[in-house]
Image 1: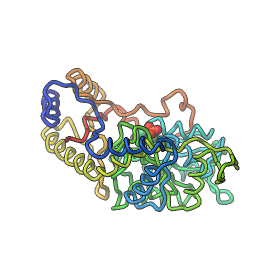
Image 2 (image 1 turned 180 degrees about the horizontal axis):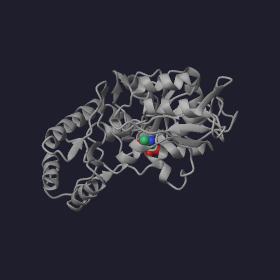
Image 3 (image 1 turned 90 degrees about the horizontal axis):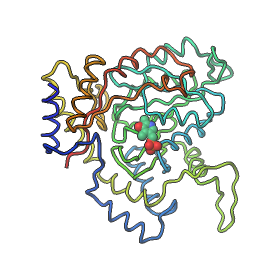
Image 4 (image 1 turned 45 degrees about the horizontal axis):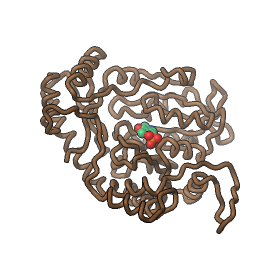
Amino acid sequence: MLKETVNFIRSTFKTQEDFIPLHEPRFVGNEKKYVLDAIDSTFVSSLGKYVDQFEEMMCEITGAKYAVATVNGTNALHLALILAGVEANEEVLTQPLTFVATANAISYCNATPHFVDVDKDTMGLSPSLLKKHLDNIAEIKEGKCYNKITGKRIAACVPMHTFGLPIYMEELIAICNKYNIPVIEDAAESLGSYYKNKHTGTFGLMGTFSFNGNKTVTAGGGGAIVTNDYNIAKRAKHLSTQAKTPHKWDYKHDEIGYNYRMPNLNAALACAQLEQLEFYVKNKRELSDLYFTFFKEFKEINLIRETADSTSNYWLNAVLLNDEKARNEFLEFTNSNGVMTRPIWGLMNNLKMFKNCPKGDLSNSDWLEKRIVNITSSVRI
Ligand SMILES: *Cc1c(COP(=O)(O)O)cnc(C)c1O
């Protein structure tokens, strides 16, 4: 079964010997042309036409009214949390099963992540378990939500669409609305993923994206905040450019800002990549279908698939193994045979920085952590 898996991945990626990475970028479009053009224009930093073009393309793709380009996905999240009004000594709800950047960004605000369990099918924040948890521990005072146990304000909720699989967004928004908690979607992994035909990242107050080298579309490094709120978008751009007020020559700043704006050089790469997003997602969805047909033969390996109302970009394909031992054997065999696979992240609440953070029952996350493995998912050219 393990041998068949390695052989199948090798035949799918048409290489019998070479090392096969988990996910590698492809540059077969206008990447070189646009990057060279950015260099020739001398606008390589945060001003330039590709930054504007990138933001327009992000609006077109996601359907959001506004998009603001940032240096990476982590600081897009940081900025979004600030814009949502998260302050020191407050709590931000999120899932323990995520990449560390989600929890780190919350910490940059001197706020504390508050971990709530995921659903087993989406591997993302569970609306029903969030409701149960909030009904237990939360209260509303003067229109704001507080944790009755810690006495701290619950200032925001950051769900994450794990590996591109959309979570149950409508249900999540309904619960957060009930408790007056603004939602910021960490859509770093879900560019090109839809829930009920609406792009992920556009359900909450803001959504954030990443254009890191391992993501579906890369800028080398890059991020974006999308929102339908004009004032938030305006302030996002302002804060990401050192809060400099417009003036022909003078330095005037009206609050503490950040140097978080995406450089034009990276935006040039991102624009060329975004032009290929549709092709990438189609290619990835076909790969998921191929895996699905293949793994159907084996009861011990289950491919994770999108839920009924969602369309996943299948950024990283994932398989569910029977237990931790089977998971370790799978990782050992594939990696020692030149096919890179990787376990899902360790839970955030087990990291020493976050081990004392408030949390609900995390049984589903614990269960998934021991069983999920990512398998080769690059676009096949
Ligand atoms: C990649 C990623 C980020 C951070 O993006 P960077 O661009 O690497 O800073 C944030 N959250 C999640 C879930 C990610 O996968």
